[in-house]
Amino acid sequence: MIDYEVLKLIWWLLVGVLLLGFAIMDGHDMGVGTLLPFVGKSDDERRVILNSVGPHWEGNQVWFITAGGAIFAAWPLVYAAAFSGFYFAMLAVLWALFFRPVGFDYRSKVADPRWRSFWDWGIFAGSAVPALVFGVAFGNVIQGVPFHFSEIMMPYYTGSFWALFNPFALLCGGVSLTMLVAHGANYLAIRTEGPIQQRARKASVIFTVLMLAGFALGGVMVAGMPGYVITSVVDPAAAQSPLAKTVIQQSGAWLANYQAYPLTLAVPLLGFAGGLLSLLCIAGRRDGLAFISTAIAELGIIFTAGVSIFPFVLPSSSQPGSSLTVWDCVSSQRTLGIMFWVALIMTPIIIVYTSWAYRVMRGKVTVEHIRATDRASY
Image (cartoon, rainbow, N blue to C red; front, side, top):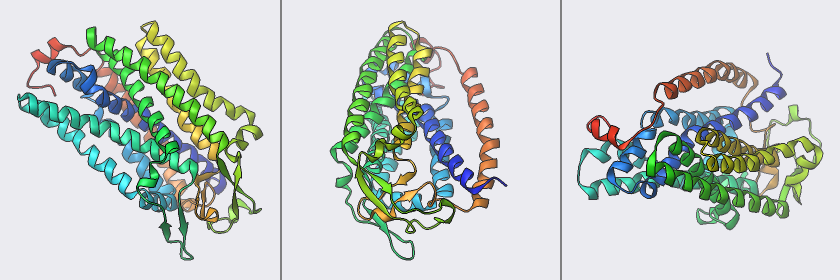
């Protein structure tokens, strides 16, 4: 059996990989949906945009579901504390997501322009709201979430819904939204041609620049905000209770990992390098490479958050001693071990099947194609 401490680190990486998979796969769907009312200037063009992601968007939801399920199974205390604290924010995401399947399936079944416009904006909301709220959630995690545990390990959230939308969290939400929209714009440039492709390339440049600016500003703000430090010397193997440690706030603590392990600086550099490379690829009309580049940027940005706060997973601002770390928020060794082997087998299968599906469905979607397959297309 794999050592327990190694399993804890493996699952920290695996959760990050699942979140990255969600950002790359479901993220470009959300980016395309966010651009729908703006890049598509006519009904036919908007149908082209919808059908560019039509064969895959439902399948890509597996990354979202799997990431949530993995957090529930591997980090049950994080799931309990975060989902109770972010309850209304997660409900907003859920309500927004309702518009996506209904919008895709029913938008083009009625020829009334008002009907179709309503669902275009519904798909926009169902794509933009989750992208924004997920970033806001990350921003609050970095600052610390106001929660604590009772003696029987029941989580209590002491903040408010509106407090979640503070300036730094909104900045993180903006980075998340622009990141996914830039990624979606690059995918749209691959699958379309003519005016739609040109507008998608322009959108890619705009949102990539905004993503890079927001990421840089976020780094400056993180450097000036207090982080969290474990001060008690506790053997990680014995720290099964989050309350078995002492945690304090300390200025500049979120930069400590980069100072202690300089190689970790490569992670945020990937975020900037991916964005800059995307701009160069778009300028050279290398849309496929631009898509890969924004995926690299997503890797850098998502893992920058994880590396910065490591070993914390969900720090507590109201009672720092209740903060959850990689070492004390996890399930049992047997649970993590079984899930590891399941993930080791199933993740490559999902990747291979997804790659095959994208290969089969590759090619340009055009207005002529939509008109020729009117009843079979979204």
